[in-house]
Length: 135
View 1 (tube, rainbow, N blue to C red):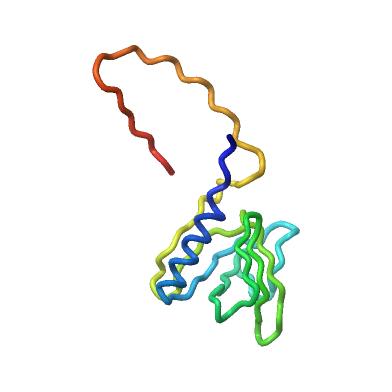
View 2: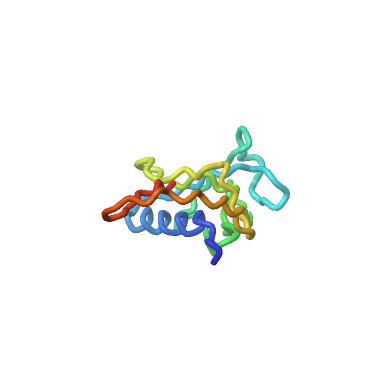
């Protein structure tokens, strides 16, 4: 069983939470790569902040591979396409609450390499339990 990338699911969940809280969802996007389509005149230091509220965009698609919508920039319509790996954060404009995504975490279609099998721990009597750190 291959685990699916988390970023699209977290992005959609946080978007819904921000909109349901009657706040304005903003995306922080790294503008690198050939397939990204954003108005370049609004890019600063290789990044752009996009207002993706229902009032600001049309045809918003928070898909598995990318975020796309039709927006207006200085009154001109512009189709926006952002591959999911370029999304660095989603947050509420009014409160700053949201989530930054790990830039090193690159979602891809191939699963991560299998870790080597850990050695068998010595058997200890009693109930066994363990905690796992989840990032």
